[in-house]
Amino acid sequence: MERKLWSREELMLVFNLYLKLPFGKMHTRTPEIIEMASLLGRTVNSIAIRLTNFASCDPYHQNRGVKGMVGGIRQCQPIWDEFFGNKEVLIFESEKILAEKQNQTIET
Image (tube, rainbow, N blue to C red):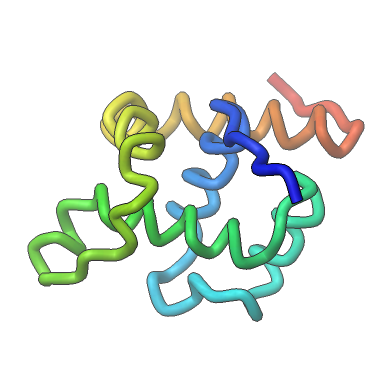
């Protein structure tokens, strides 16, 4: 199977999901992860791994000694740095992306 690179939009959607899910729910059986995988045309495992990549960027988890999965941090860290201090922008922009992917509109 050909490797599919992650787009900025996909990373934003997964980061939005990261902000919504408790750390203990970042696994392949979580309905929101299954739904995101279907929406993005990715495996459930790839979404769960990307969520743990974002956990690697999170100072809260770093201070707890939780490392997450650092392999994808190069892609996740720039998204984290851009949006963690401005979550409202991330949420608005990622909800617009989500609505487009679902062929819906959102109120602005």
